[in-house]
Length: 301
Image (cartoon, rainbow, N blue to C red):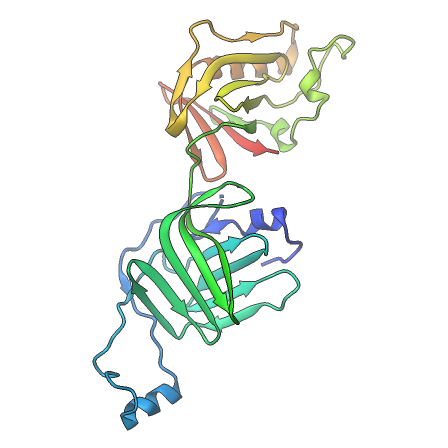
């Protein structure tokens, strides 16, 4: 894994769960394996104590095995902020990375469950995964598990498991990457302030080709650029995929757009006006119409 810099950017790189990249990633996930796996290993010293009778119940006391929570060969990942840390669990090995500290790699010596928690213990490292929604304190990305890492008397708190789509799109900004399966080259770069004012006086008659944008305010109402003109309203994004169309429709500026820019804006507006639901696929926002046409967008900050 490339270790470049820590902070928000490295958290985005590290934000993988169950082998999937997540947005903040958050990508496509593989099939899960539902089975039982025990990762219990006893050291030489422990075996000697059992043999000599010093540890009662060695032969009969067995920890509950840990159920596999991710596909075979995948990497379970978790991370936290302030202080920043990143943990992986792969092939019975815990690997902990922290800014300014050497990478800590430890073989799991004991893995078990207790009251629904999965617990992985190593020489001087312990990771506890607790089911329940966990929200990253920097990205607001939600995950399915709370993770607690203990080492050398210190405890680190963070999130892990599968990434969950946000319950709401409020206060987010997006740029279109694909219109009904057709990728947009212009989506490789986030719009600049100049791109956002192509409808203003004294702008070049033929505006640059830029991807449409979607801004969702604190109440779910939308605005943005269709790649040519600015628009406001028309749709309100509710929680859990709900979309409500405004009876009055939206409004927009009326600059004439010719050529590729005009074709792009018309395609976007036709699809946007027909959107009936939304969901998040990894780090991608997907807007869907009743006849299964789609607009795919990536988040910008």
